[in-house]
Picture 1 (cartoon, helix red, strand yellow):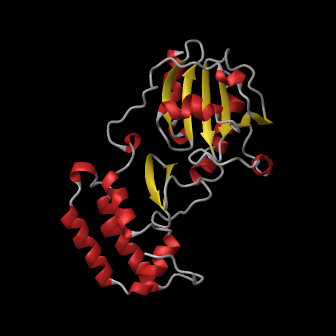
Picture 2: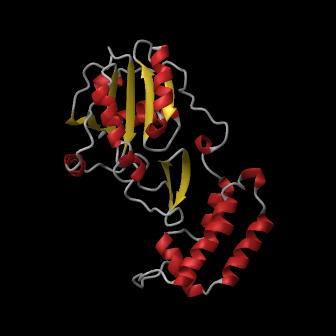
Picture 3: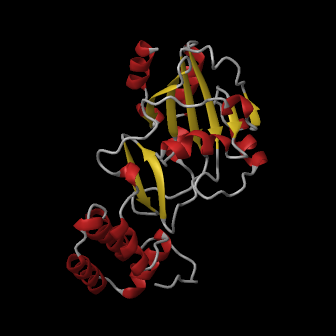
Length: 274
């Protein structure tokens, strides 16, 4: 489906109806039918029914606003399914394993605020990777932590489009509280705006963003050379953000990996093991 060059106006009732129909009867249904669960006849019937139910011009407006790929590309995405870390029963290969943390001191990173000092002597080390914006992994799709689960989000279909990364913004105050009230825990965060695309980072823009916030009271560095990404994010294979690693520095063991919003209980458990 070709993109429309006509400027988009407000959503019409017909467009909203098409969006809700697509969300309920295509997007929600076929997210789970990947690999050997794929049902081609069911897909074809669902697409034919959707096309017949809505005016083509209305569908074009919805398609353009939602930044959806072509039907063929969408089918390929659904067939392939989510990456391993989004599938039931998956566990990061780093969980419970000893990791080399010398990269923290070696860098290089662009300093924004705070210091790296003290992480070796802390009972627990929390490393978080975040971005103020998320760039999609593929047309119309991005991986982002939201609430209690990781979702494969499609622009305009889950009530939020990228950017900004609202889940990243939501944890700023929690990390600040942790850094300011728990001296036995060292928090270090790494910004990587191009984490999924290798795009260069606008350092000045990130620094301005941090300066505009009053809820980021912890060490912040910009991962300009993808040191943190290559040293712990990629090896952990949990390719979503924001993402936190809870590590005991005394032995370098990764005790927990996940959404910082879900870190409270695992953190206390890890402290008992430290």
